[in-house]
Length: 415
Image (tube, rainbow, N blue to C red):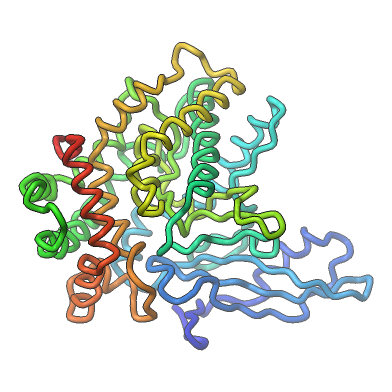
């Protein structure tokens, strides 16, 4: 299904003609045609395990005899069969297209209706492709960029994400309150059950390496028994969150909010972001907001502030959440207190273990062009070295030793 151009795997179906309609709509009556088309890698090697990200560069000829350069980001799946099976069961690319094309615009319009302009991410486009895809506006020319995942987010970036997350949770909770459940089947509990067997295989494989490396982590004697007890049940515990408890404060969660799935824009030479966008929205779900909070704060922040400022970050998020719920006319009686939000974080402490087991290993691993999805989630000779490196490198050990100790002291393993 793909062919190699340098280090970039290109789908065999990819050609310039697929984008004629998108470009024609962009330029209207002035559009003359595509002068040149060049796909290239959208991310650095070692930055994406699960999909192929391409930046599509076009030279567009216009009827006024000028040439304009424009680019788009195209996400397509790898040919790895296990991943393809998950896609078939869950339509993850169709889900993400639907979120960008329909869910996000609805939430943004709700803010416009109360006088606030909020943008959550890039514009999305549709093409007549013969395979799975997501086509998005290229945010690079607008000045957006990622922060290095190995460094993690500092205070300013973390607060910027938490503000946007609070806006997202506030408006989606308001939408649920006034309009009821989403009609999309991918946001209903039974839909996610189709991929549970695959996730259990992945969790079992990764768990073997994690438990093998557990004695390497500082303080492991204190939490080793608790980790061994939760590991066989982590998939069931996470899947239980797919059926929201009506007593929780539930909203549409991003579902995979970590450093590489967030982009920032800056003004001038300032290193403080003035805008934050979410990218990669293929795993949304309605559940407690505790999921997004724990997953993001434990998987994306700088080590120095990750735990020491955790409670401060929750207070900052809560302030933003309350502000935007009030703006959207969400019922005051249903607005969660800060105390209640902390009870949610304790109730769903299991998310921290899931983050340590499945998110932190690739996030904290040094870049390598050899890393790939197959070796990450299956048992193989090639994958053995990769997974051992993920769970035993110095950066991972530092973060996870602190997180596991913190979780144990909070009773987070007691599920």
